[in-house]
Amino acid sequence: MDKELLAERVEEVLWQAGFSTSDRCYLRPRSFDLAARKGDLFLLLKILSNIDGLNEQTAREVRRLAKHLIGSPLLVGEKTRDQYLERGAVYFRYGIPTLSLFTLADCLLEEALPLVYAAHGGLYVRIDGTRMRQLRLERGISLGAMASDLGVSRRTISKYETESMDTSVDVALRLEEIFERELIQPVDPFHSGTVEEKPETATDELVTDNILRLLLEIGFEVVPTAQAPFNAITRDEDLVVLTGVSKFSQSMLKKARLMSSLSAVAKTKSVVIVDGETKLECIEETAIIEKRELETIGQTQEFEDLVLEKQNK
Figure 1 (cartoon, helix red, strand yellow):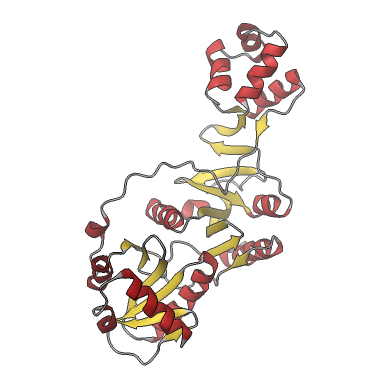
Figure 2 (cartoon, rainbow, N blue to C red; figure 1 turned 90 degrees about the horizontal axis):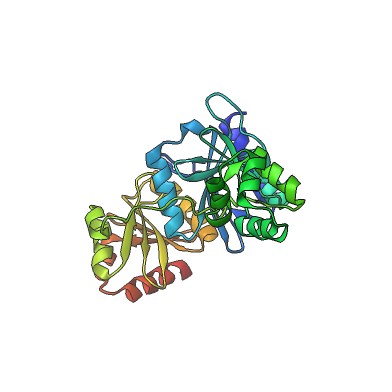
């Protein structure tokens, strides 16, 4: 199916599962297509018919945004270059958990997490090594006997038990057959924690926009974006703001409305700082602040007070 139809069906699954969703991101460039929340679970979703269409730069930004918004990145697709995604399997593209539409529905509607994940060479599973060792010792099975039965080395058995080393589906099923117990652990694509991000460059080195640098001078942390429908995430200990920078235009109005929808789901504030003059104070829930107003602010609390004032007018 094409991306538009796939996106509609992803939204349907999310709604059925009780998620609130943002408007879809039609503005370009866009690193993600949709934000969704249910309780404490916040997702940034990228939707592609062919998951090979995700590039490393986009994936890095989605992971970074999810990290700063206390959420999880997720890619939903239909196929790779040469095959359709297996139902019940988790794939990974540049560290982002990747599911088919059917697997997403199984996870969210049936509470059935996948048991396998795809990696180079095939499908693999995660087994409960501690439980495996306990069962082996209870039954008096030696490492050597277990290794011989499975056709692997003693060292491999030891790694299963002590290092939680993953294994093939065939070996895992054989282990469950031997012990007559479940040993395969589900893969949670919403809390995968599979990528260890490199330390980020100091914030002030990344911020090149003069208006965003004003926010730095006030005392905020500013995380600039390259492909999001906002220019930065601005934050301190008490406040997180999706921040846009623009001259007044029709495209700015569209951006402000989309940012309002995203901030409602992300549970943040949203602000567009206008380089110029405008009579608008707010577009939906997005506060509109002129650059000259920003230049008079010296503390983060003053900025927050101004945002609230604009939203309440």
